[in-house]
Image (cartoon, rainbow, N blue to C red; front, side, top):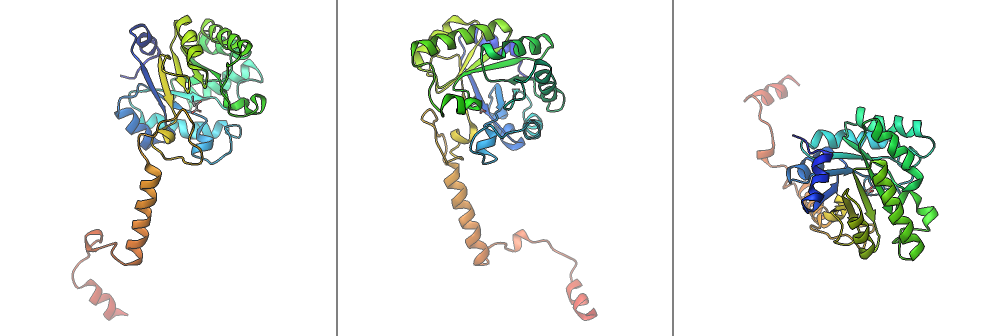
Length: 278
Ligand code: KIV
């Protein structure tokens, strides 16, 4: 049975921390799911860590759907959240509805995530009214980096902190089932978490959130262009992959791969027969 948003909300009530990870493909989703992560985000971070863009801004609906369907095929139990890309939910409420519908209908996701607070409250309200679970996302919202002036922590001065608290309340009131807090100071995240009945999922937001989300490529040490301050590398796969590929190159060059055990056999005498025919 797949995890539901009710179970996610119940975890907060039980004081049970909620681990969430991103995944972008079938194989990774399958491993993450089998490890017992209840929430998988197909984040638009895939634009940077999988597609090599400089930010999440160029990511399109078609790219997101392509990866979402793969993740859904790999995740049998976790609730899969599809991340709505830049400008696919701002222009109008009908636009947000039709793009979110694609995540659920074509992508097979069970929920969508969108960035912003009060500015997107109407979209959240309508999506939820139509039966589409929504995860909010406030603090550092990477789709707004040009407006924010870069990848910077948010809510460090009183006006910003007050606005974020207000945004969180508005998202809860609009029907979001959880809210990502990205790069908000730990005491502010804790305050927001205490004021909400829905779970907060932090990334660079301190230990006081109800759950934590990390980008899988950071956790596995796969993406080394930039490692955020808030990430912990539980493995260093980039180095391991480079070493494995170097061994392969060397084996091919020295003809120590493939060996007979990697080769297929054929009927005895066939080669002699083919040679004789020629
Ligand atoms: O796109 C993403 O991976 C995200 C997380 C960092 C929350 O939005």
